[in-house]
Length: 130
Image (cartoon, rainbow, N blue to C red; front, top):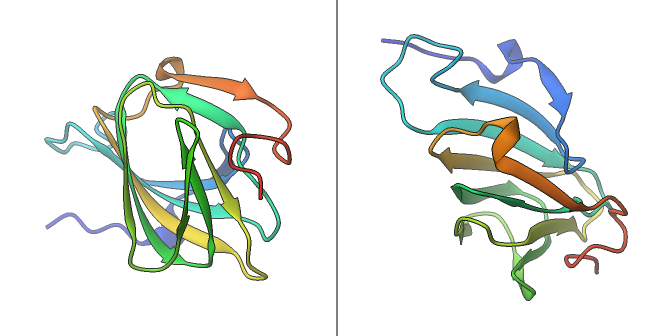
């Protein structure tokens, strides 16, 4: 039974500015997966860069308060909330709290750098800004 500990996954900064740990990815493990699973963190007061993927995504919020923007529609989201992001949707997430915002991110088919486009580098002024 394959088991992955979060602490064993290297952390890196994604193109949208959030901190990621890729937990499962079919290109990095001998697993029959179509999707990838990552643990993401957005620091207090930060908004990810406005971006879009050619694939679908699902965010499951673990900790922290914030606002999600998908194609200009904004919604406050917190722990226990799940957000579906359709392919090619313009998206960003803002941490409006004082603690780190963490969430799981499922990308189907699995995330690839060439499937993502960063639309706005100014993470404080993106569509999801508070």
